[in-house]
Length: 261
Image (cartoon, rainbow, N blue to C red; front, top):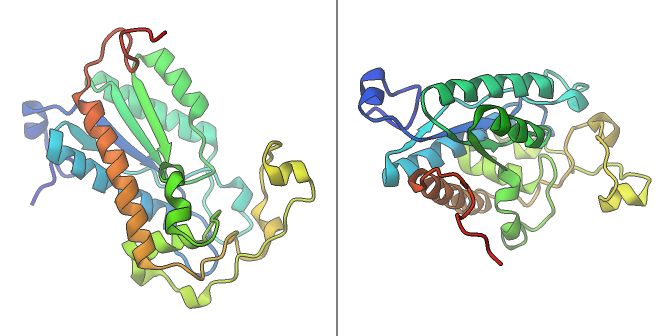
């Protein structure tokens, strides 16, 4: 069976007959995740989510196309751990700019970027591309999409390779999870209260946190929690894709035409 919503599976004949108006693209990373999760954790869960939401939206609109997920991300602060792969944000930005330019050339002006790696930051790029190319880019972080449900689903706060990521992995690719090898995720806190509270920010060198590149406790992870979170965020993202596909682009898009007083 050919998935018409997947750019790698559909073909020119179908695209000439029906061109989608929304493109969905994932961004991720290849990096260490404690001792129990695969190096491709971010890529694997991002690819699974991107494909699922594209399919869900396609079934309602037939107007969404899913591009292959970008596998590499910004990982300069994790390079002390074996075979972490790092590309600069400027490299990612250039690649994304050229992908979006290609989409715009083919008449697709609505693009949704689903990011599955905390080190990637596309806010400045989205602002610039929209000004330069006349397209509309919307982006989200997988971990933030369901942030309002974290406390309902998970028992411990997550950061990196903890309960959230491990639960997603158990739901999506349990054969790659070796939970018995996991370290506790205990790490050194910042010595400055302002950094701990978050109103002063910096970049963390993960090798200074601990020796296993995990910064959260994965011990309470379950596939059921992961599936609950995945169901919630995929429904939320796919509903947005459907709304976006059905929305007309006008002079004020994506705002309402009327000013609210």
